[in-house]
Amino acid sequence: MPFSNFRTSEDRLRFSEEQSRAWVEYSPACTKIVDLNFNLQFMSAAGVESLGIDDITEYYGKPYPFEFYPQTFRDEMSKNLIKARDTSNIVKQEAAVMDTNGNNVWFHSTIVPISESGKQIDYFMVVSIETTEQNRVRQELEQLNNELETKIHRRTLELEVANKQLHHTSETDFLTQIPNRLAFDRRLCENTATAKRNKNHLSLLMVDIDHFKHYNDKYGHDIGDNVLQHIAKIIDESLTRKTDFVARFGGEEFAVLLPETGASSALLLAEKIRENVLSQEINSGQLAKKKITVSIGAASLKGDTLNPTDLFKRADKALFVAKNSGRNNCKASQT
Image (cartoon, rainbow, N blue to C red; front, side, top):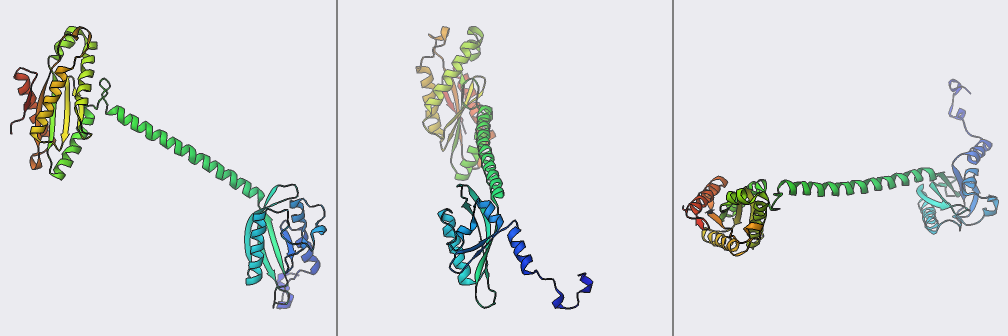
């Protein structure tokens, strides 16, 4: 009947009983009728096909959900049927059932309480749409996402390690394997800021290998490199605190930063380093019987007078005095 010919509410289109039965029977949705005792009274062709049941009539009048379903599904469906009965509300769930061949089949189910009289519930219509393929795709996506997250996490860790290694390499002297000038400059600024904030002393030692150019020119760079490596090790092992810091400043010079250390303590450590160099035999081929010595300049500043430039200038000036005083000695900056 054309829409223009509708005149009253009685003219509205209604399904006949035969049309309704045909829609339920041949709909792609699995439709089940369950009575108030939760016994199955009807299942549409879509459900029978999904579950692989040969003769569904054998299950009519038997408790629903079926015994061959997983216990978790049975518990969930039973709970929701009771909820729909007690509240007269529509209840939804999504879970996997097991077909007669033992395969998991996923369904999104809607439990609808039906009242033909409009007063009390007469039965339940359970409409289920198979979502096995959607769940398979979802699980595959989740697995792919997990694998991707694992790869990203592993790659992130590898990048962090690579960055740390790069940072270490960029701030490490390749010959002596102690921090280089770049690391010293950064550490000097950090230590200065901390000392000013805490109103503590910061001391700096400048260490120079005596007559190093002569060793290099006479015995060759291989022996010179060996001397540098030994001196770096001796200085590093002379430091007892984790906060003390030694770096190769350049050429034959080394710099030692001593946080929270005053002038007298800095000079004592300078003497310790000098004596350790003098007392330890440096086995460098033709230099085996020769004594290697160092000259050291020390400076210490605190408070408003503390800044990286002045601290370095004072230590460098003290080193100049030590070298011009016969070498193999330590001198402190004169304030």
